[in-house]
Image (cartoon, rainbow, N blue to C red; front, side, top):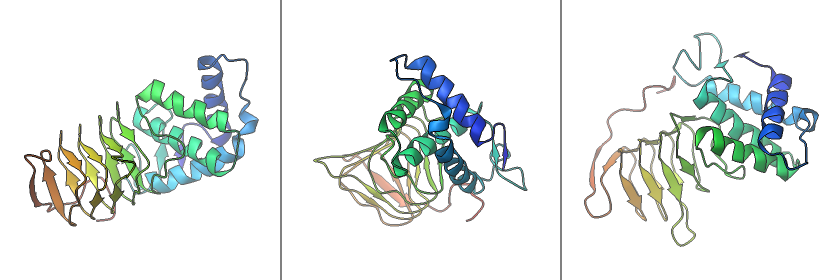
Length: 218
């Protein structure tokens, strides 16, 4: 992968951000998570290699720029989640989660299990809760995935949530579904290949004829 910073540089950069933002007397040393950073960077490479955009894949290899907002938001999720998986100090993972909220407006807790391949597109005010996600998941700005009566949604592969959409509660969203902008799916399942438009009172469903265009694999 062609990365603007290597794993050690990314660990140092994130540690400096955490120490500047959270002046609680508990300094974070880059060495405390450099091993997890290397694993997270490998996961990031796997993800970005599937994105058919010159900003993520240059035709030969994955590309990562720590000054690209969408990419760095995804990086902070991968890093915080990897620390959690590695049993590292949870305080560092919490700070990375909060850093992502502060920088990008993303609320994606480090315990949330996003899939191996996903894409965040201008994800300001996006909240991704503890649903079950599958590969090729896309979330735009102001998207919400959350519970209703403590039940979370389950997503098939190639699901796209357009800006301002929400999926809440006991929902099973089939493969190749698209949730239209400003739409709400609440305690409802969608068959594979469905375009959902509206809200529980006014919902319209149509065939979803095409997959999201920014994936290499159709």
